Amino acid sequence: MTHNKVGLGTFPLSSVFNPITPNEAEKLVRKFIDEGGCYIDTAPLYGNGEIEKILGKVFKSVPREKFYLITKTVKHVDEYGQLFKSGKYEDVVKQIDNSLSRLGLDYVDCLMVHSPDKDVPIEETLRAMEKLQNDGKVKELAVSNVNLNELMEYNKTGKIRYVENSFSMINHSISSELEEYLLNNKISLIPYHLLEIGLLTGIAFENFKLSETDLRNKVPYWNQENQKVIFEWVRNSLAPIAKKLGITIGQLNIAWALQQPFIDFIIVGTTKPKYLEINLKANDIELSKETLSEIDEAYNVLEQKIKSDYGKSIREFRGLNEKFY
Ligand SMILES: NC(=O)c1ccc[n+]([C@@H]2O[C@H](COP(=O)([O-])OP(=O)(O)OC[C@H]3O[C@@H](n4cnc5c(N)ncnc54)[C@H](OP(=O)(O)O)[C@@H]3O)[C@@H](O)[C@H]2O)c1
Image 1: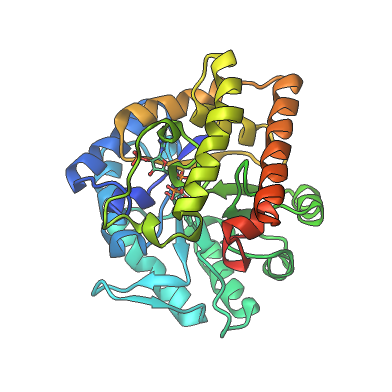
Image 2 (image 1 turned 90 degrees about the vertical axis):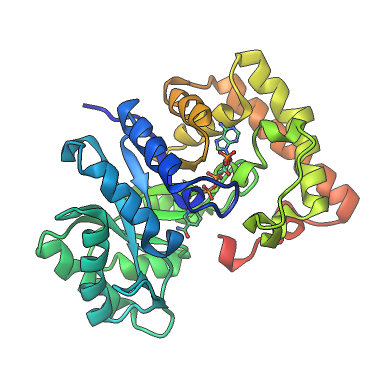
């Protein structure tokens, strides 16, 4: 059976962007699974363990084979709700039990390094993850926020199945070397921030203002100048392509990502049931070669504009660095 390739990212369920109650979050996850969604990405960090607990409530009444659950390691939340970072063998081995207990599961489908612990050898973290795999507590292994060298080190024993890095129509973070490595090693990219936390959606048409508590206030590429330039680009270059196809701008972005050869499935976060429905439907959209070329042309337009107005590359303009691969 092939699963819907539009997964659910659960970071926004902790009200970091738009507000959502735990009850609404639980309903949203239930709706996601009821409507055929399968892949769910979470982490102990999200709401300091609270999102894993909400997922656990939903999973109680869902057959295990209906969902594929990714949670993370190295950024841990202990049994007292305390957050700490450690890639040490004993911490990785011990903390999975706290995640499993919050999730109410015997195993997770995928355990992912949230981001490397630079103070601990990669080999040590990997050894712990392989033990958990051998013990049956995790099925597949993954890493996040890594460059090619780090990925190669994590994949020394050939066990890494996924890499989760930020990637979008305006964040071409995958170099040709990394792409080749992914394809040669049957590792798939799980892109995060595919919708650029809302920048690449219909909100470009709204009189949009972030609330004071919204985490996007602290994201470099959500500053006023970036919003202005990207929203204008979405309105003038991307929206007409989506309109012609009768789909939303968000769906265009999702469908585009799903057609990349190094992507098996994607994750998108939302706090709104109607967006969930729209996003899941993007699974069935296939973009023609002509549309893909139009998207490439649109990207070139943005690149040229930023170069002529600011004398910078898109990456420089958006303040992307090692942290935002
Ligand atoms: N590995 C890592 O270090 C890492 C880092 C960041 C994120 N992640 C994972 O990646 C997931 C995705 O990232 P993200 O959730 O931060 O950002 P995202 O998927 O790029 O965008 C989510 C935002 O877009 C809006 N949105 C979603 N669907 C929409 C639609 N159809 N129309 C209009 N707006 C829409 C949502 O707003 P509403 O609130 O209005 O729905 C939400 O705030 C996270 O949830 C998390 O699981 C991983």
